[in-house]
Image (cartoon, rainbow, N blue to C red; front, side, top):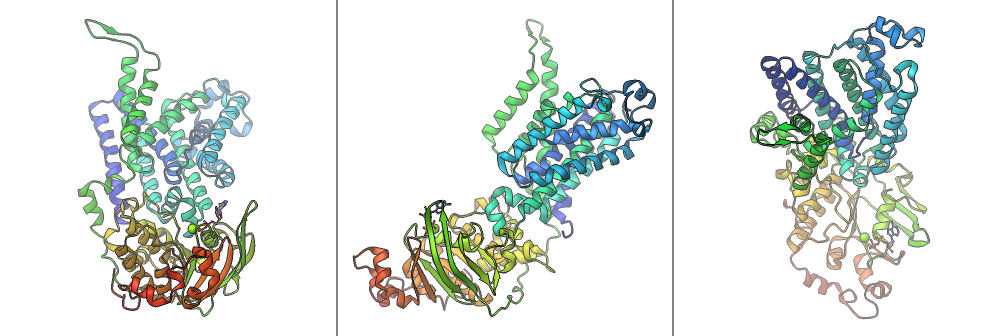
Length: 624
Ligand code: ADP
Ligand code: MG
C-alpha cells in the first residue's frame, strides 16, 4: 500500500487540530454543557466519517451505517452495563452474558469485532452492487437491524430504554478516537486502495479498464466504514447512558447524512465542517423551537424547527455549491499555505525514461470476434492481428462496429463469439480488471476520465495496477511526461482542456505499461494543432515501447499516414484488410465509405499527401 505521503499528514493535522482546539476551548471556557456539546460533536464526527469512508469514496449513499452504530452500542452496552442494574433490567439474559461489568475499551474491542463480522457478511453481496441498488440495500440493512433489536427483547429490552450504561465517554476519551477516525479515513482516502475506489466512483467502466477491482475496494471501504460507525455507536452509548432502538434509526441517519453532504461527501475535512455546521444550526434552532420572547412580540413554538432548518440548510448549500461547503478537494489541497506545506517534501518529477518495455515477440490475435445486442449484429467475424511496433488502423462508417470491436477485445463488453488472445492467453474471458495486467490497455470514444481526481491521481490509479517494485507516483509522472502533461499534475482532470483530456486518457493507458494499446477515436473533436501533437505522441510512444497500436479514426488522411495496416469494417462486417495503399484502391471500401461517388479515397496517395503536407510522423519526435 506504500508509505504515507507528506500531504496526507498535513491534511490529518489540519483537520484534527480544530477538533482538539474545540475540545480545549469547551473544557476551559464552558465546562458542563459546552463540554457535553463538543463531546457529542466529536462522536458525530466519527459517525459521519464512518459513512464518508464508504459513501464518499464509492459514491454510493449508505443508509446502513447507523445500523452499525446500533450494533456497536448494544454489543458494548451488554458488556459494560452495571451488573446490579442488569439483573433487574435484563432478567432473561443468557448466563454467559451476565455480570461482565467490563470497562469501555475492552467492550469496544469486542463490539467492533461483532460489527466487523456483520459488515463482512453484508459486504460480500453488497459489493456486487452499485448506485441506487446498493443504497437501497443499505437502507434494508438499517431496517433489519432495527427490527432485530426491537424483537430481541431479552438482550435489548425491545423498544424500551436500555439503561444503566456507565457514562464513560467524556470529552477526553472521545477526542483521541475522533482524531484517530480522521487519520484512518484520510490515510485510506489517499491510499492506492482509496484512490481506486474514488476512481470507480467517477467512472466505474473506466476504472475497471485500468485494472481496478471495484467490488473488492467497495468491500474494503464498507467494512472500514462500518467499524468506524460501530466505534461511534459505542461512544454514543457511553455518552448518553440510556437509549432505545429508535435512537439509531431514520432521524439519526438523516442528520448524519445531512452533515456529510453539507460539508462535502468526498472529503474528510468536509465531514468535519459539515458536522460542525449542522450542529450549530441544530443548537440555534433548538433554542428557538420552544418559542422565544422578544419583548414586544414572541415567536410561537414551532414543532420540528430543527429538522426544517437542516433541510433548508442542505437545499441552500446544494443550490449554490453542488459538492458541499468544501467541494471535492481536502482543505489542505485548497489553502495555499497548507498546499506549500504538503508539497515541501515532494521529489521533483522523475525525468528518467521508463524501464525497458515488456518484450514479447507475440501478438494480439482477434479471432472471429462477433457481438450481438439482442438481435442486432453489431460485429461479425472480425479477424486480424495487432503486432508490436505497428499501427493498425480501424476504419468504417458510423455504426460499423468499431467501438464494439474495441469493447469486445478489451473485455468491457465480452464478445458473443470468437476469441481474443495475447500470446495464446485468452484475454476476452478474463475479468475486465485483469485485462490490463495481461498487457492490453484502451481509451474510450467518449472521454472517460476520473474528473474529480487530479491529473496525477488519474494516472496513478492505472500505474498502481502494474507497479510491482516501483512507486506508482514515479510511473505516473513518467507517463505524464510522455504526453506532455507533467506540469498539470495537480489539477483536477475535469478542468483540463479537451485536447489535454484526450492526452490524459492516453497517459493513463500508458501507465499500465501495455504491450497493446487500443485508441477509440483519439483525435475526435481536436483542432488540427492538437491532432498533430497527438499524432507525434502516438508515433513516439509506439517506437519507444514497441507498442502494438490499434487506432480508430475518422480522418482518413491521418489513418493513411499513420498506419501500417488498415482494417475496414462496414455494418459489422470486416470488408477489407491491408496496407493503406491496398485499402485506398479497394473498390469495396470505396463503395462502403462513400457510396458510388468517387472521392479522395479512390484517388492515389499523392492527393492525400497534398492534403496533409505538414505532418511527418517520422520527424515528429520532439515533445508536444
Ligand atoms: P462505431 O464505433 O463503428 O461507430 P459502434 O460499435 O458504436 O459503431 O456500433 C455498432 C452498432 O452496434 C450500432 O448499430 C450501435 O447502435 C450498436 N450498439 C453499440 N453498442 C450497443 C449496445 N450497448 N446495445 C445495443 N446496441 C449497441
Ligand atoms: Mg465508435
